[in-house]
Length: 450
Image (cartoon, rainbow, N blue to C red; front, side, top):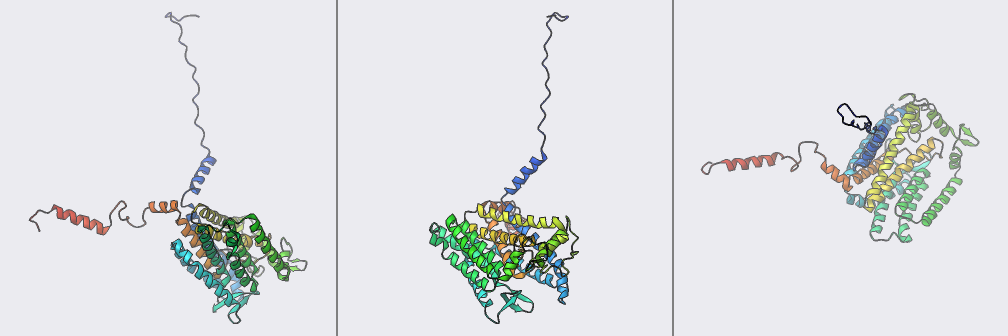
């Protein structure tokens, strides 16, 4: 090995390796992490319920105004007639939602029996000649004078949720839900009584929603599969009999998937024109107020088929936005029901979530031609004060439950106050500060000073 000029052996230099590059930041992974953190926050359900319900209600008011103008003018009424009534119902419902969101859980449980008794009383009055009135062939309305009417069966949904949740919670506290008779009685008989009163008026759509609420409560209560299947079989048998014995219901069943207004002996005009409205909307719609189907072609454009007008005017983007808002409400309701330790909160939250989700699925499924037309409104969206008031009270109920979670209470307590400073939390209010200054001034005086 040759040496250097100095006679020393050459120095062996270490081979430099390229420095390891830091891992590239994946934007998709970063977005996924942020989304998971946002979903796991204590107030996520609270904001989803509050924000989602308000957005659905406001968008519903806009679409009611757009879809009902032609109908109002055809009836020789002002173009904003239905909008003003819906706006009044939304204002009253907002007050009910605010009141329900501020009520403690004990007060909600105390209201269960009065609401049930009031709903049953009003549903009985519907069948009294001279008091009840028929609308579109269904005897389910009570006139309040003028153009104002009330549908007591809509309040029956809220009554069943509150009363059923309170009943199951009390039985769970006594460990009675493991026995079939305590699981079914008196929940199922009372639910069947409400269903009978509704079916006396011929409103099968509301009866389906009430049945869904009953099954939701039984599912949350841990009903055995055999018991659940038995009750479901009995309900399905009764439903088949009611459909078979009614030519109108058989015609609605025959219109599933219809593409022509006249499908055999059935008149599928409404179902087919609902599909026409959705198909003509495209991606972003024809523009707000530019619907063609609402000019007399599509019946009930501002009530049961308002989703079709939404698809025509706001397009696929508008309909997907509505679906996303309802999906957010459903997720928030499931989250509230799954994280609570209070059995009443779990049953009530699950019942309200089942109610709103099932009604939205049935309404949208009918507009899409996937389900028979049941005549149920889209919650918080369609025209109808009788449906809007109990639904907004139920939303307030969910908001109260979301605020009552331990983690949510702690997060709300840590939020800064809206106006000024909290007493004893980082600052002093006026009276306390004045008293402190007065004590300091007194201590600074000399003994002979007055």
